[in-house]
Image (tube, rainbow, N blue to C red; front, side, top):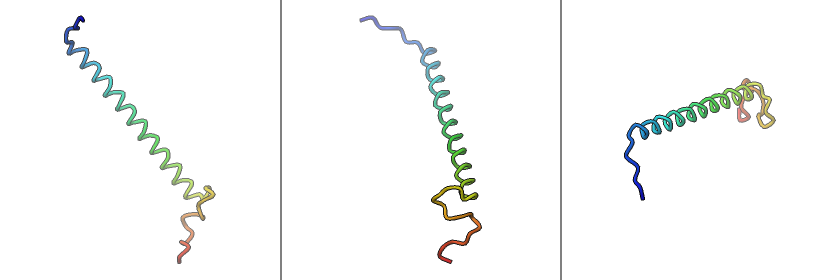
Length: 63
């Protein structure tokens, strides 16, 4: 069995690459959450979702 010499520079490059990939994934999730929030809020305000009673201006059913 031949052992490879320790290569700190290569390990640092791999860590930097993994951190960049993780950061990109987190940013993608954040964009998707923001898009979902905006879409959901627009649907709630327009009443276009079938399970929503009406617009936000409608009084709640208990009043």
